[in-house]
Length: 217
Image 1 (spheres, one colour):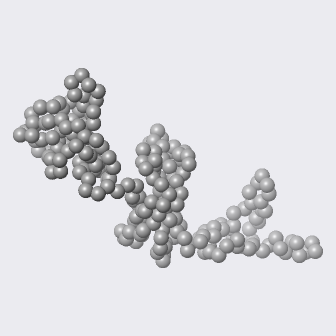
Image 2 (cartoon, helix red, strand yellow; image 1 turned 90 degrees about the vertical axis):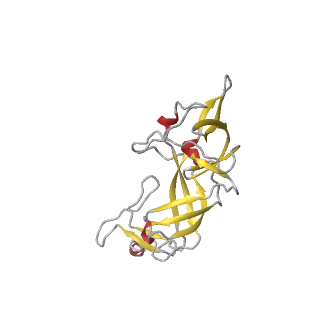
Image 3 (cartoon, one colour; image 1 turned 45 degrees about the vertical axis):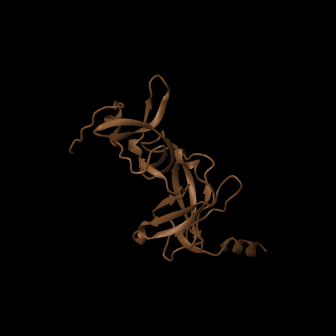
């Protein structure tokens, strides 16, 4: 019985079907069986490649717009720009530990599951993930750099843009909506209206009625 017990400890049984994607232990090495308060020796990593997840880090300013079930597009670098469809299956309940230069920023782990795993994909590959958080039809959008805060008279500050009118800047209050890339949806501005765009330093002191002059780079 003792011999059979000893022999059983030399056999490792996989808990599921999968592919060995990382082999740590080598033949002849001593391994330790895990106990309650002490993990055992890691022998290998077994991966189920029939279901592929992409993990992304999402800034705290955007995570509240996400929900499980939203559609996503995953661009795998190894597939030379081919885009794969997926859906959000998990959103972190707490922020990831801050690291690096942007330690003040908080990010959340978001998991997107590919709808159809592509042959050849392997754990650890890099990718870009785009999640469709909200969709608005026929929206008027302006560059994010065009949106400013200004007070009208003695009133409170309002969000708006500067409309270009005969070489002068005219402040137009707007309501902002969905952000997509470098554009933001606005209401209160007619479609096709030319707006003033520039870096913060250029628009910081711009006032209603100011004369504009284009500057060549």
